[in-house]
Length: 341
Image 1 (cartoon, rainbow, N blue to C red):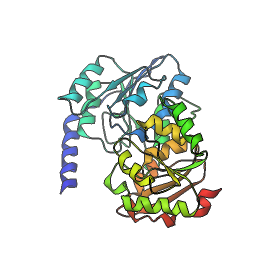
Image 2 (cartoon, one colour):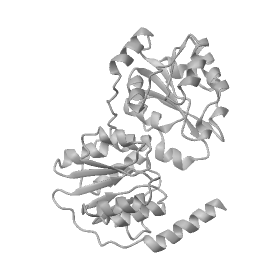
Image 3 (cartoon, rainbow, N blue to C red):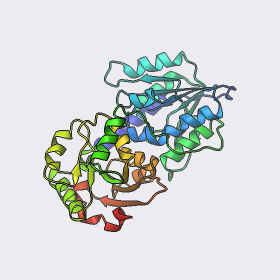
């Protein structure tokens, strides 16, 4: 019933909000706006190269972004982005205010690539009123005059195709991994003091509840690596640090950098890793960008999600699948040869 109501709501929204635009040729130095207001770190990582490539192709192009409070810091520190606009979804009339504000910019190109377009995102696209709108699989929408077809594409390829529509050629799609930790020296000393060079980094927590390991299973994983005589670094964030601190006390092979404050600190820790294990795709994409060996946990039935968000790594990669919960995966499923060479 919930899915049916969503479908009806989206259909009605499309009927009301979908407005045909004629499209216009791009000027020599176009103004481009990229919509990334969902706040997903993984989405930022795999799209990070487009800002660099747009500026490399035309340094005089204006490249702007709509982001959220969750990923604002990533865009703020990206010097290839001219302006970023923070959309707080919880603020009254946030989408309407943002759309009307940005309409005054007279953008030549808007890039908006979600698979399922929410009515509020369609409304924002219409309000911004760019001369050209680029979408993904939006051939049935009148408002997107430039469409990227094909359902079997990794999102990095979708982003690459979007800037091809802007005339960019010879695209280097290697990710731009942020390098903005305020604790580089402290982390370097932590790694050195605990002899954690080329360690195994494990993240036990994804965004959804189905991607979070229980304390019991976290302990089983650490015990497995203890038997194998392997040191492990448990990746953390402030909300989970107290739990992980209590766990590592019981294991001489487990470590945690307690002062981890943000994604920049996590990136810095991952630079020293040899293998990265995670159910969370943002960590997977960072590991891919750093060319680390990867063991990723993905939901078996969500094949479309895997096509779009798989590790896309040139390094050794192993995938373990679960049906309902990541806790179905056993520590014994990780083969010794995956972590020893």
